[in-house]
Length: 244
Image 1 (cartoon, helix red, strand yellow):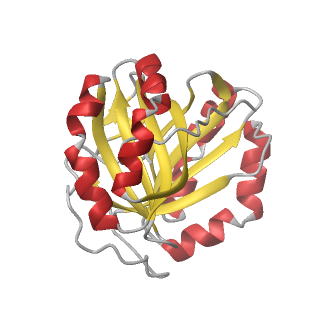
Image 2: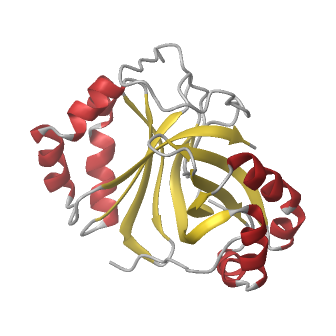
């Protein structure tokens, strides 16, 4: 497993979701409280717009001392990101800890994005924004995005390793209805830009009770074996608070 991570600090965060959120989704969500365990969203009338052309993104996950202060600092440094070919995409807050932030930006040039993440000037900018500790960076090539508007803002970002990405993709696609039946909607997936054995997956959580049961089920374990997964999934649950 060759997951790219950087210890440099990004100017007020970049980063769920890679979380693919839907091109028309609500840009600002005033409700940033943790998800209720019985969340249920009916997406029966949703029209899906799927994008399969590759899209490189950079994600960063880190903690902040004060979200409002950090957000103001992040917005103030937009020109700095644009100069490196980075475009605001999504900001999310952890369900378990609202001061844990996930930011995703689209990257015109992944090498420029990597250089930006290592820029020593970012450390000072992030310190001023109230970032606590060392951020974790990832550089992802999305190969699937569902941009349809949906009702829920709750997402699960999952990372894991596989034997062969294309085989995993084939098996994963074949079980989409099972995920739908268990309260999940595929939003985006791809792999590390330098190692396609490292998978990045974002799903919307429409029914948390069903989703939690499915994640613990023998059925999912069987599907993972079938797909050639070689590590346990690492999940990060978050709520989208801004979509640019």
